[in-house]
Length: 99
Image (cartoon, rainbow, N blue to C red; front, top):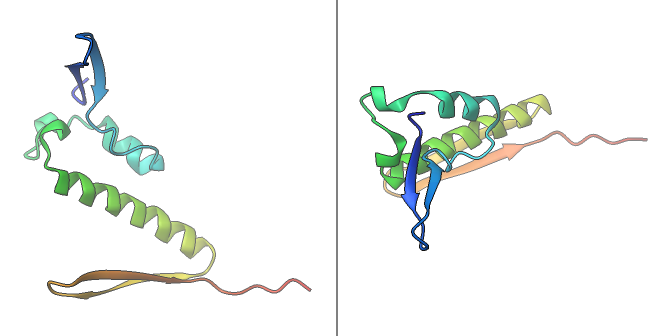
């Protein structure tokens, strides 16, 4: 499998590492990303990706999942950004009173 690599641990034993271990869970989207043979793309194998790309992919998936949950509860998710300052993410959920 293209997303697997072997590495020697401290004891000299070979251990198998999934180069997409930075995407634990992540539902169907994570499953699709992990199943792709990235070595045949311009990005190359995930074990060569810089940490910044891994972080961006992880955050993108978690934002997608968060937005799905918020929308299903009839809420809203948005971001406000300033160049050079970063982004702040906000969400709202309706209040439901049970009487």
